[in-house]
Image (cartoon, rainbow, N blue to C red; front, side, top):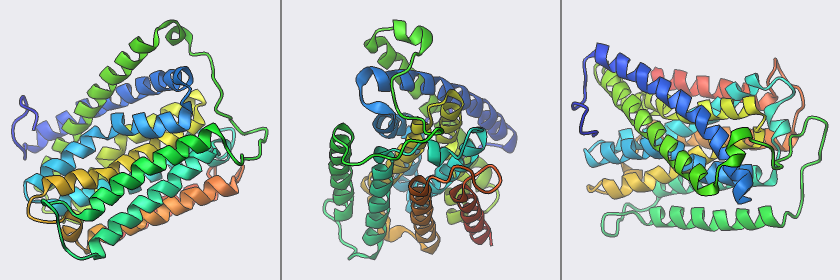
Length: 347
């Protein structure tokens, strides 16, 4: 816990106050992160997709890592597990909200890129490994389940393959009048700063966002602990939504700047880091494997995350220019799927 914050649960009034103030800092910080990240993606040559997945994922996902580690270490592994996978479902839904802010065309049409598609495939593989861990033999080595090592290896290997594919793509999405390719752009005053100063500002703002997200999570934990809700609904929906706030704001802010590839990549990066959070939780949970501590609700949320990621990939491949309402078909399906998951967990 933060040293200057009292132990949870807090009274309802202070919890709401911390939630509001820290939430506002998270929103403002995430907006600033987009400007800095967009400039760094061009300056480093990584591109919006890779930079968004790797660095935005870390900057916006630190609070979720801490929450899962703390809850697992305190003997509540099911809450830590559902917090991680619940964030994946909530963040994927945030893309449908970001799509509503992009007026020109369907967001997935404009942001089609090989890197985002491959990162979506990587996320599906990692989610599948988490499920396989739950159904595999309940064995640990120095307190860690072997699937945690496989997940880390798959992530690192996937990054290497995707980075190579981005440098020498074997195929590309067909360009249309609404396609927004990831090309270097002008960034105003940020272009006059050195790369080291850009990195310093990015790290500093990311730290504020992470700390604010942690405070928001603690406030939300205090609220839900006084209501007697189940761990699946608490971690999968309420804390999942809270931990998705930085990624959601980042995606909307990126869309408003026209950095549509970065918007999708930021969400995919947050999702992948949330999945890697399970590895941290597995290390922190000393009574066994976090995958086998997961309950039926937790596995249900994980499977929903798989479905939602497949829907997102379908939208990126079909590239519907204009769909239902102001959203593509995938945006509507994401909203319906998340609403259905929430309703089932609430009953």
